[in-house]
Image 1: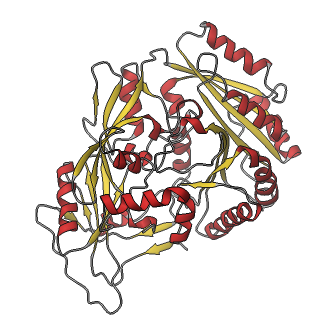
Image 2: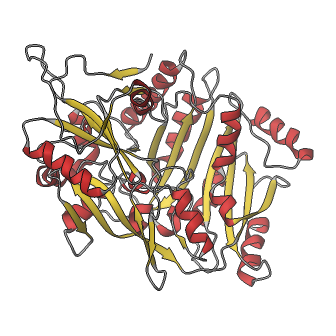
Image 3: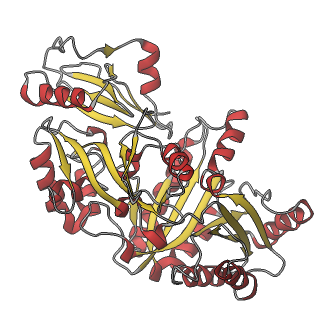
Length: 497
């Protein structure tokens, strides 16, 4: 069964609003049983949508595990309307709470600097639209998530990670300035020099301090980015796999690659061999069957002219110095846009099979490099591989801590290199609790074994878990909440305060 949060005895109001490109929920505080239900009246200028169809659509997210039913939805035409709404909540007798919902669309949501060194992007603009607009002008943001049909404000409220993070850091490390509508209803510009407490708090701040209405994104003036050489290589030995990954993320910009990720192919899961030539696909399937686990090293080099020496050097390194299984390497030459938007192809396939909008009880972790072997043996071999079946993708790749700004709210392990592990399982309504139990067993194993993981895109239900998660940053995080959202109006669904 899905976890459901519904206000059965509403003393206050649950709404949703759309800011140019951002959908925003206004969530109710829950009435105590002794309280009488109050009638909520909003200014007529705030056009509230309450029809059942719209409410139902807004009640679910991609995970399809938790349901939160809003009392209404608001679609403002400007950030000023959001400010007015929050001021009404902060200063009036009516108490309600607000959560931003991404994946909206924005017209004219991107504006450029004259030198194209940055772009001002509306908070709800989808990253795929940012890619499309920037690629046409020969520039590009330097850090991308794997899936691009998510909003700028949404990823910046978490971290924004993908295969480029080892080189350029997460998306939150590539922002120069923000406009943020705080819980008091004010719109504040912020940067490392202007309102730095807000700037560093909002980036990775889980929507707790404000709604991002504009982000100034760093662009890379590298016009030779129209294509990508995209490789996948197979390993049967975990140590060789991680050694090669760590070697690749240590290379400098000139002689290195642009993208590094990894995946696990397990014999009790779906073995996707489609990247390899048809003549090799049965061999790949047999490898997984014989070894139980095969490790996939995935890399890409962006280029314009394949004859440029550095491109050849990278390809030479991949084919001659890495320790993948001989013969098990495949390369695709694809457009830069198509490479970055590659997950869209998988989404289209799953939608055609009615397998996209199913429960996704994902578990995303950061694991310190010094403990990655213990994690692999205890989690991958002793928990995941012993399940009757797994469904979904298991991501596994390292990144560099020095590309992150520790002053921001996002939490990562305290080691120079740590691994991103994404157990992106799909489930059905019948087995979602079983998958969640596996996730809980993984977390429990890490805690009992002293593996100092940090969760990403997490949801804790106890304040003490949040305090433990933020560790030494908890004091500053809590102080910023009091400063920018003293009435706790924003993002109550995180159950932090």
